[in-house]
Length: 359
Image (cartoon, rainbow, N blue to C red; front, side, top):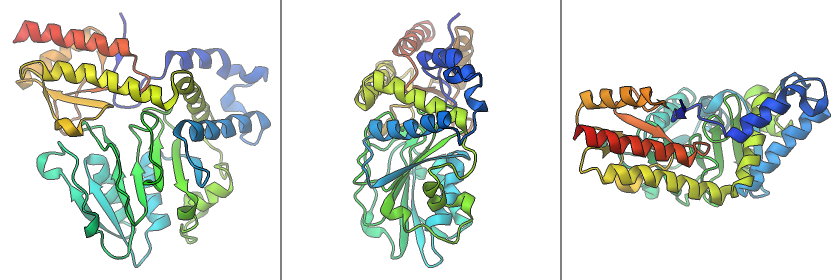
């Protein structure tokens, strides 16, 4: 039976990448050693490391005045690293609240300085993206923080405002799925395990002028300046995870680059939203139409009993990871870059059949 992986993360990896790893990772470049056994100071590994950075820059068209770091600790460590490096004693940090992850990002920053909510849609269960009142940004605001895609509630920010303060964006669940306007983003970060490889490495892309403003009073292991100075080799990096990110970058370049991923995401999301919208209310999307995510499609059925039946039958047919997050319930299909179109088509066929049998 085919397994259809719709997990919210870690997510599927491209079959081509897994096949390549199986053949090459455990005797890397005929060295007699697995990639994860190589010294991170060796020429063989440094080639992997630097090529991965180069490929990320190429795919995302990162300007030359940015640095790309490959760090550890997941996106959650960035919640505190950002505040440690950029939130001064006499400053504040502004947060746009669009879901659980933005709440967690602010909570971490609260330990290190003063923060405030600039905009939120919590009052409507995060079904939409709020308007951002730039005129309400307070004096001495160090940065404005966004979460670009909200895995739990199924919403996504299409673009970011041209603010007068640095804009920092958590792109963990939609990086490499669409272009980034670097004129409006000063720091982007993302755990790799959804669209950029496997868990273990976090990509940080930071404007050099912002990097220069990072605090010098941060311990080296938590200092953006130190990691940039060391080319992300200050300590032993997650070598195998970085290798996997490089292979995913190769796969993206072979499949239409960022434009190919954007088209792929739009097509897959469209298949699911068309079924939801055409179901005469049998399936109901959680997110408002204009805020819908192309990465995480969230929906409900008429009753909890039908949802349980839907999920049970889906599991029997090989569909994995369709449970909604425990905080909101319902169902969720995560359709990151590596989820094949054919798997989404299979899910839509199942949804049609289930609706026909249960309406």
